[in-house]
Image (cartoon, rainbow, N blue to C red; front, top):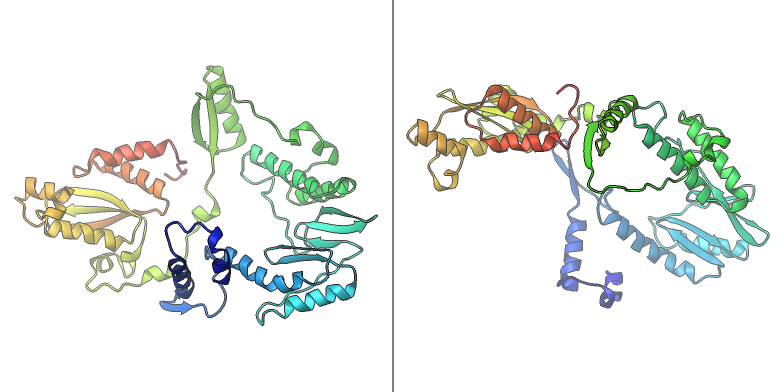
Length: 402
């Protein structure tokens, strides 16, 4: 709060007062809790990981810790988040600065790293004093796994070539001229570890240098296709070229393990609703499942197919209320009001529900909904669901299992 007050004249408060902003900050920081095993826990000290405020407040906090140490004798003093590099005239000065930094808080204790063979690591650099000047080169921590997208993984070749370009370019840009060769060799070793068989001679070829794309026609069509392999994409591009079609082919990301693997739904297996119709029919906890495509059938035989990304019980409760009182003003525009008026004389409807599919991906779920509406020939659905499906088909990859 001290920092806010100190710089209050330089801050655009967006029609808010200092008191309102500080109250919001306190609310965001005080009400930090999470649920585990149906119990609420609150963080006792520090900032919660993932909080939007955490990076900014961490910088402000570290600034207050380093402020007294900056006034001590030093040649240079730089910090990035919680990594600090200090250059001083003597070891005694360095010791004094280190002790000062560690005396500012009982909860923050900095560790110290000294040069090895004359090289001092800092972030992704190694620095060294040579002939009264600082030279540097690319650095990888010994604990780093150096994991990149492997060359034999199912990714477009263009993406892999970009990885080569960016890795070598980063290594060179982190190095002074006399250390570029060392950094490039280190980058090549990292690439080789990930399956890229690249010699130093190849890395100097124009293929691995930055390319400048020239846009000839801004009005050309764009065709999005799921990535099914470089050979398939090449054949499609050749066919389009054969017919002289000015079309750009864009490959969409394939399904990853994140998309395929089932997430842990242990907290969806509980139900707090009394006389829950969903759990009674499908099993306890099914009412909390998200991403459901469902079918609601009237006792006359006509049915409606829908989808929801919310807990299933919440969406079904809305349908149930509309069926119980179809002629009330709040439900007058619903599909059930129209059906009740045309087929049941405005009376309450008796309905049953079925879960057709569960799909977490919103786009895929809406497309599947449209396909099921068409397949079952649902009379209660309107054309909007099908129009939405057609719109989404042009912007999403359809899995092979669809």
